[in-house]
Amino acid sequence: AAHWARLINGSMSYTGMRITHCWDINPDAARGFARGNRCTSVEDFDDMLGEVDAVIDGGYYNHAFDHLLMAPYLKAGLPCLINRPFANSLAKTRSLVELARKHKAPLLVPSAFGHNQVTSEARRFVDSERVTGYHATTGAEDYPTHGTHGLYFLCRAITDAGNPIVSVAFRGTDWHKPPAVLTLEHRDPSGGTFYGTLHSGEFGIGMLQIHTEKNGNGRPFTLALSHEPLYRDTGFWIPGLWAFQQIATGGPMPQTYDQILMKQQAYLAGFRSHL
Image (cartoon, rainbow, N blue to C red; front, side, top):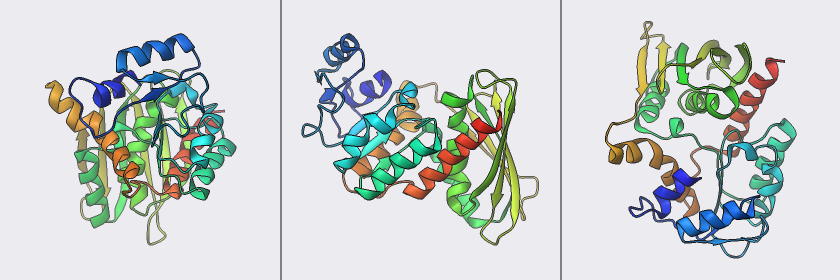
């Protein structure tokens, strides 16, 4: 949240948005955030109703409670950004997505891996050729909070192009440290099947090698962070916030409600498969 706050309310704002109110379960933390970002802290999580035009729920570890924290805002039809990993059960996931759908609340469940030029180029490649398989890597120390970056990357580039996920399997010593591998089965638009793997560990930022009928050896798409702070922000961190501003001002959602539901089901299927 502090990182996004710098990009929104900092001395060099990159968006047309402003943070005006905040809440934290720890009132002292909320007041500290408010002082640092020149906004107003509220006592209860739903006290921002009637005061704000959109809501960002940035906490990783809110996922067990997002279905409660965000319900008032979704019911009000407000645009909502809910950070990964979104929810820790399928029931909570469906509750959030269906509440947003019912009340026409624009919804974004982003990762920086899903909103950048590299992912856009990978998606165009997938749209133009028939995929036969892929392998990908993501730099992550755990599956639930950061391994999901790689999964969200794959969903934006592969799954959302008409290649739904059919099954998921996670292999690793545990959820909290690498190495680990996620294997995904997809159905392509013609009804065929292909598989992909996502390796989590010390792999830099992330990479996706897509194999197609015409490019059997595959074409690589590599994510990287610029060494220059300005381009690191604008090329990697800001686009997700721009996507949220887009839906908050009446633009289309980057992912449909069904696409959000599918990627969350894939996340949970991998999580549960390890059991």
